[in-house]
Image (tube, rainbow, N blue to C red; front, side, top):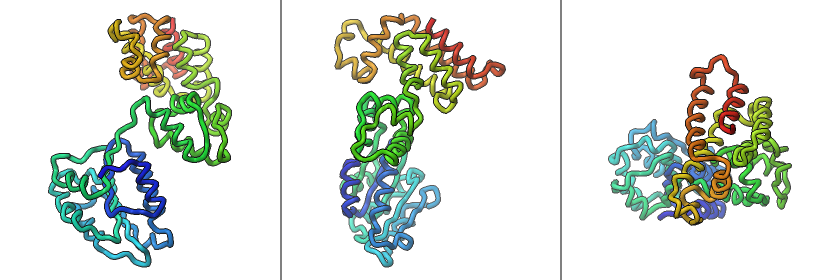
Length: 339
């Protein structure tokens, strides 16, 4: 059965455990969080040191080696927890066949947690059908671009804090869409802000280190408005504060803007007033930006920008620019993009 992340976490926190969890997919953050929750809540009265077994798929021949551990009774505790990390290294169906029999009669005092990261189990294998029918089976896909900002707002809310869309976007635009990194930065806020507090730009600057004035969000905004002076000020800040805007990350942010603009220009004219289509094609948060930026940038300029970004990405890595510093490269790039 497929069960949502929220339901799994809620039941585990309540002390309700299923005999087998099989977690797969590209979004490893949710897999890691469930593993941590199960280990944290499985031993309320102690005994973890005797009853927690962690094995790695790359180190075992087949799942039989794990099932032999699962058949052992717990010592001085209610249950045994067996975690199989890197299960994706068991990449042939015959290595999983013994699990089909175990699924029919699992050890009631054992929680088996299988972590099949960054991949999906082959749906043609018999074990897949058995897992879907007789275990908590879930594949976690990477969040779509438009879903990351709402996720940040929701994740902040789980800790009793509040954040509006603009400040959530500020964090995402400067940290990226990696949920693990985002969660780590949000944790800095959780540690210092009281429950019920509103996460605003002041708190973000103070505790995460994203400047309210000089960040990739503001750089992107300056480029959308063709504000060269503001863009140069932000680049100067990045050069003086390298952790705030390393060149590869800045190029990625700028590329996102121009690639969405180029995509907008390639939308048929008769569809450009269709907001639903634009949201689906560009992503919800890029529709207005692309429409407004089209007032300043021609299709030819957008296409040229993408070529320039590819060139300067290579130069930032030392290809053909060994004698030019990052500051000069970034300023040179901005001038070429915006003039």
